[in-house]
Length: 536
Image 1 (cartoon, one colour):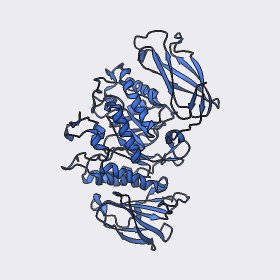
Image 2: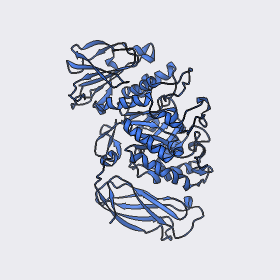
Image 3: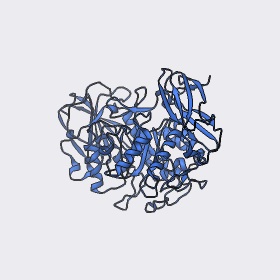
Image 4: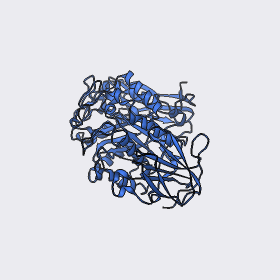
């Protein structure tokens, strides 16, 4: 009997007994699975060219699994009635995704955890064109670097879109907008790169339907075509460790949300074993439109690439800071802060590592910390040589992909990951009232973000421009140690203890600094306690 390690990908291929005029549309094929505990589930198979259909699934129980193919054309013995079995065994390797299992919501529904309960810190990187354009060797080198830097997820686009109208072979995923013609060869070139993301211990985050412009699949395709294409992609990659972005960069609010709700219900239904969100366009909040949808698992937003007062206030005082506490609870993630080297929408300035850090720490502290995404212009474009990105002319000339791998911004994200790994970050909640005098009231660039753990034994405060901060620590344990953290270098500076309920402290310099109040063990980690979340 075939042995398959738990939570890895198993593929079964079958051949149809007849030739179909349009296989993508003419037949539906699925596989019924019987798990070791006798529970049943189904996964869709996908047409892979010619007479070939494939089914991929990821067994989550150790023991014997049985499978049977079922086809809408019951007269085709190649696709209907094929059956077999396999034995799922414990995973024995060192890949954390297969050791711990796929991501799901935490018990309090504010964070992400693995299937075994291990907290999962989302540190995403933006490689929109990576799977579409990268050469295999380059892709592996990039993924290895990001894994080493502490990243945990890779965001990418799955089909042609405004930023990549065809792949390097001159092919597209499909042609047409109604009853589209699918091109399986396009996906043959993508499969290995999608699998490589998981092989490097990173979660894959595919955008199924980019949706900003009328020519993008999320708008151009009929609703029926959008549903069928998204279901095809889920069948093809859904056995991998993925978190789905149903839509990319779209307007999903108001009346437009109804189309996306219907698509989401048709693609994912009420029972799905991988998390799903939406990637919205800049400075829009879709939490209230989708929060009640059974297929919608986390609230993604895009603080975007602006630097105006209004743009900065949207992040630190707007929906991410105000709306996270609504019920039902869901994790909140900034899926697109300002990219490193991306020009500001408002002034003649390219964002630097400092602004990357600012947006990241703000995002992690104004909502319950669950994670954040990084971006660099050279990585998302994925050019082999300098070019003006397709469909993004106002960005100007962007360098080749390799210039975005080891940068000050990426280095800052590695430091950020180490900092949060030293904390019980899965217990942090925003604590804006801790800041007695908020300098961000006059200038949002100076906004001080604060958070505290549920058991009131650790506080984190981010100062984007150094200076003095006055804090009310009355709710915390008395006489806790206080340390400054340098988010550029990853070093700590001890500064005594918090002996009073109200304290004033001055950062070691004018750059951004992080203040941490809490007990530390000899390894430099905050000592974790247990406790209930403080009452609002």
